[in-house]
Length: 441
Image (cartoon, rainbow, N blue to C red; front, top):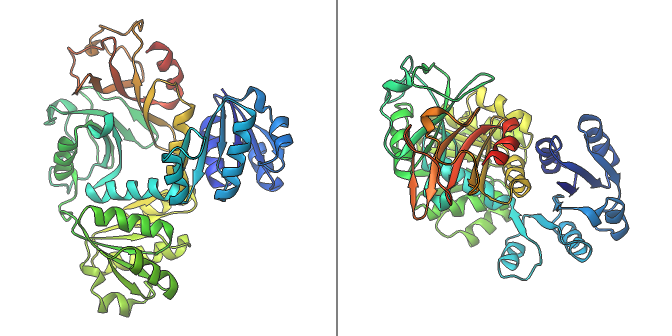
């Protein structure tokens, strides 16, 4: 696939990293330094120029493009670039936005692009899913919400200790499949004889009800149902998160040191309590009993500030700390020093963009392990050689089918089940195997 990407910032770089090995990617940006760094690291073509320019797009080969992605940090540039591209090509066009108005206009059919992705919406949904399932490292929805991918870290002090037990010994609810064990750098498609170890990450494909049952079993004993959440940072992302949490009927408190921002929060989100205060002020945290909250979401503009606030809150008794991290390289560092979930907004957006580069039959998509593992919901071709082969034969090397969508039913398969023509399958696979898997299916 020939892809033209406009914008070489953090979102653009994340997209390049995931796509460059399998696609012909050209990156356009005015910042020559950013482009130089990308060109040195990845096998892509770079063009220094204005991504809204007709001539620059033509130099990039837009006549032959299959996909155009406008992913700069400025909505207006993305919109203009997309409209210019629409005049030049029949390729699919994906636009990144932070504007609820632009998103509403696109949904109303007023903007002629194929997809518009809101960074704030995507991260708010990711946070809401994490809050809704204590103990889960990551969750994603498939089959219109009827199936979920959930990742947990295994601990001996969980409500149910599964450390040292064979997969065959575990109680696996009918509506769930253990899709993978991730152990250090190894991705294991588990068999019944594999033994779960402390620190493993177990990846499940399950119904929403079964996911919550797994959460109760695998969450540490000090985690319980979340009722009260503090959101630190009242910018667009913080407000989107607060709205999503209020929609779950949680008690939400918003903290921001900027009086104007706090006022906007109070005006826009009447269900939340808003405080104009410095969240690094321990006197404020103690006075307002922040330590009694079940969870804190840190989404200020500075990574180091978010880390400090998260650790302060944990020291006061908050059980779950989630931080939005600007630099994806910081995610494992945050989690090592005590932050329960570190989410990178740009990676969340990049994941949604990358979905449009997959096989057109792909209906859902998610990534794990810094893009090393992919979960995709894929429609099965009637001529696939894998139709009718029972899963006990392990017909998919380096992959596993976690669920089958068959008409109105979602089936969580066992060894005697097999794919049928017309099915869609939710599959976990190592990223390097996905292209071959798509051909086989």
